[in-house]
Length: 91
Image (cartoon, rainbow, N blue to C red; front, side, top):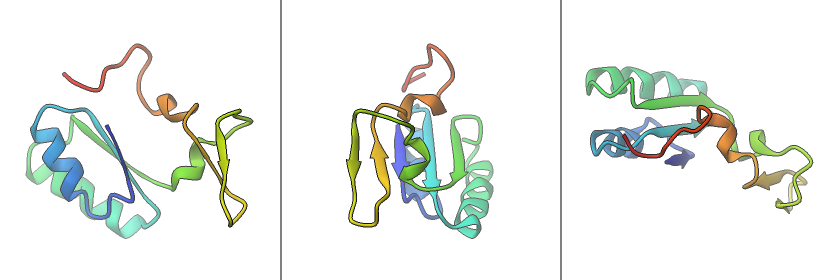
């Protein structure tokens, strides 16, 4: 499960509690640091990854990129790169 603009991880953590493997992404290092700490407090740190970045970190010469007004691209083709090979979205 991918949680873009995850903030402090509230939704990501609750999804991890429901046995989803979650990746939370936010542009704010402060929010990501807080989210990582909260995941540890809720004993789901193994099931959720938090990364500093935005949706544009997945774009690389993809046919499926969508042009945004800010000239950044959103790519659905590259989203799988954040999961391990042959990974699953559920345990």
